[in-house]
Image 1 (cartoon, helix red, strand yellow):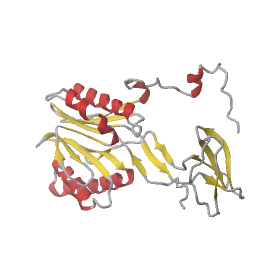
Image 2: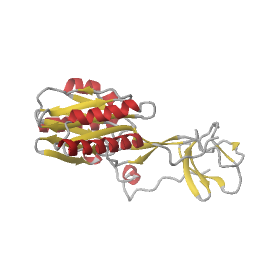
Image 3: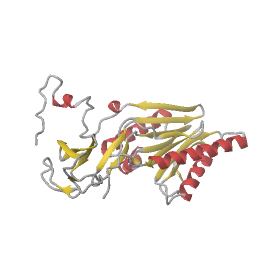
Image 4: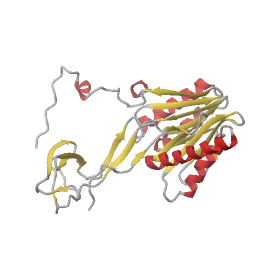
Amino acid sequence: MEKINLDAPHSMGTTIIGVTYNGGVVLGADSRTSTELKKACDFGVEMKFRRTKNSGSAHEGCCYDDVDGCNVGGGVGGGWMVLLFDGVGYGVCDMCHGVYVANRASDKITKLTDNVYICRSGSAADSQVLSDYVRYFLHQHTIQLDQPATVKVAANLARLLSYNNKDMLQTGLIVGGWSKHEGGKIFGIPLGGTIIEQPFAIGGSGSSYLYGFFDQAWKEGMTKEEAEALVVKAVSLAIARDGASGGVVRTVTIDKDGPERKFYPGDKLQLWHEEMEPQNSLLDIWGGATAASPEPMRE
């Protein structure tokens, strides 16, 4: 049986976007990083299946035993309970697994050189180590040639590492940047190591909600302001529809003048159909600090 694993691999179920415009590129991403809470069925003791009083139904794996050091606390809502072990509380659902947000403000846009950046999706660890290797090789390349690496060189290095390790890596990438030889370039490198040069690229779990939007909204020869607005609008739309995307929106614009990073807080993003207004606390939803507190849940 499996243990609760609070150190499970982090997955950036993500929205990443790269767009070219007349003079450069804009890269954008959300900031939510998720991880999975594994089954809570093995603490080195023999456990018994029992019905939780909140859920109203028994599920395999939703188990505990009345032994020292392992007990179930009061329900925290909707079939959830707090499992206490050696004084540490773990939130587990009545199916004994789930996904939680490990980092709501992660930065998924990584600098490779002064003129090339990479957007990362998939496994956080895989994409971080791949980006570190690409940055290391590009640094050597720049020293040897005494000139900045082009976007194509950076993208091909990322493609080479991704393809040669495709059996072990779970990451999708977008490489974008500007060079005096090529201008603004965007390369998509999906899972498996294929490389595709495109005028725009989208990736991550949120991308499935954006293909039709980009077919309608994309146009050749956009200005810098139009490209930035398109990226922010697209990421906010994916955040509204995709449960694995969220947080804030980060962008970087790269042109002949260098990179420019921007930050868009989540409460300033456009709201889409059926989205709720941002709230500071549940008290705001219940009617303010002066409103009566809801009745506590009882066993």
